[in-house]
Length: 420
Image (tube, rainbow, N blue to C red):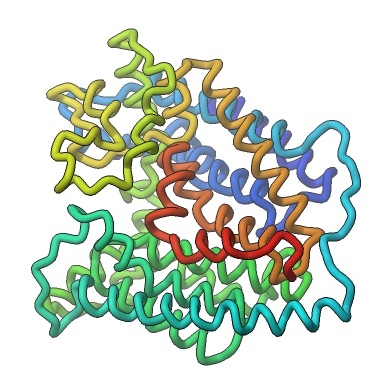
C-alpha cells in the first residue's frame, strides 16, 4: 500500500507542477505537503523501515497493519479528490478585482476611519484576553479556558488582533513585535500549540503576496528549520517553563530530531490514529451519514446554558471501546477518516472533492485581487486553518474562523466587495 501511496504522491506532484500550482500560498500545495509529511513519510517509516506503531503504546486493543493500510488508501483517495476539485479541467480567466486609482484614494480614506475603531477594540480585547485568561508565569489564574467558549475566544484574540493589524496596516515593525509577544506568551503557556503555528502560516502568506513570491527566500530556511525542530516539543517546553524547570535547548532539539527520525513522537501518528478509527467503524459496521457535522449548528452555545450539548467529537465516543478510547485520549481522525465515518469510500472522495472546489474558487479570486481585498483575506484565513481541517475534519472549517479567529472573520464580513 505504501508503494501505491508513493506513486500517488509523485503523480499529484507532477500534476501540480504542470499546472503551476507549486506555492506556499496555494492551498492545494499545502494539502499535498500535509499528506507527504504525515502520511507518506510515516508510511515509509512503518512499512519500509519497520518502525513501531506509536499508538499501540496507548491502546490495549492494538492497531493492525491492515488498518493502517486502509487508512492510507482512504487518505490517498482524499488527496486525489481535493486536487481534482481544486484544479478544474477547464479554467476560465477572471478579471482582476480592483478599482480605479482615483477611487482607491477615496476608499482608503473611508477605510481608515471605518476600521480604526474596529482595530482599536480588537487590540484592547486581545490584550485583555491574553492577560486575564492565559496561564503566564508569575500570574495566578485558575480559569479553565476550555470550558467556556467565549473565554476561549478571548484567549485567541491576542494573536488574531495582531494578524488583523498586519493585514490592514502592513508588515510594520510595531505590529510584528506585538505578534511576536503574543506568540511567545502562547508558546510558554503549555497547551494550545496551534495558536503559535497557525498565525505564522497567515504571516508567510501575507509576505508572499506582498513580495510576489511563491516561497520565502532561502535566508529564512534556518528559521524554518529551527521552528520545525522546536514546534513538536513545544507543549513540553511550555509545561517545563510553567513549573520553573530548567530547559536545555540543545537537548530538547536532539530529542525532537531523534523522535522525528525514529518515528517515536506522537505528532507523527496521525495515520495510525485514523486507521484505528476506520477499523473501529468497520468492526461496528456503522456510519454516521453526515451527523458528525451537526454540532457546527450549535457549537456557539455555552455548555453552562446547555449541559447536554453534543460534543464536537461525539461520534468518536460512539465508536470507542475499552481498548480504544478515542474521545478521552483526543485522537485525530484526519479529514479522510471523518469523511469515511460518514459515507464510507464515497465520502472519502466527495467531501475532499467539494472542499477542494471551494478552496479553488477562493484561491482564484484571491490571486487576482489586491493584498488588502476581502478575497485575499479569506484565502489567508482559510489557508491558516487548512491544517486543522486536514487533521481534524471538516468541522474545523466552521469552528476555527468563528471561535479562534473571529476578529479576522468579522473584518472579512464588514469589508465591502470592491474595497482594496
